[in-house]
Length: 205
Image (cartoon, rainbow, N blue to C red):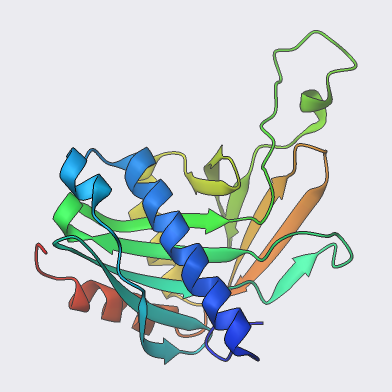
């Protein structure tokens, strides 16, 4: 179910709560900010537009304005595996110097492979490294709890450029239990959504 057309108010509230959680974790994991900005309460995100299967939200954390494009996968495989909802985010946090930050919520704790283990019973040997697949390109992702980030931050711009061309984005990750999840995102409307997010957060605050 794309967030652009939620079937219930509950789905919208859930998405907004998840958005704040991811933004907070992203700020802690990817940027350095002073204690005052980290302690500042974040305002409730405001929906400012829907474009195809993507939506754009604004929020305010202290003096820092946050803009992001958000979507949910059109398809989750296997469909009978119990998980929390998944989301894709492109975040703009100009007050922290963060632009075009790509991240994903998987809805479960992502397991990381341990190829150097000599123990044949080590379950981590069977896990796959999380990836983002776009056309013929594959991007390695870095797991942190239930979230994924582009492992090489320098490749974020390449990923976004590819996403602008449309088609679909496929995210693959295994849980700590060894279950593989494949999320397929539609990129319909992505270009318009990310342009809106960038425009609305063009300033430094």
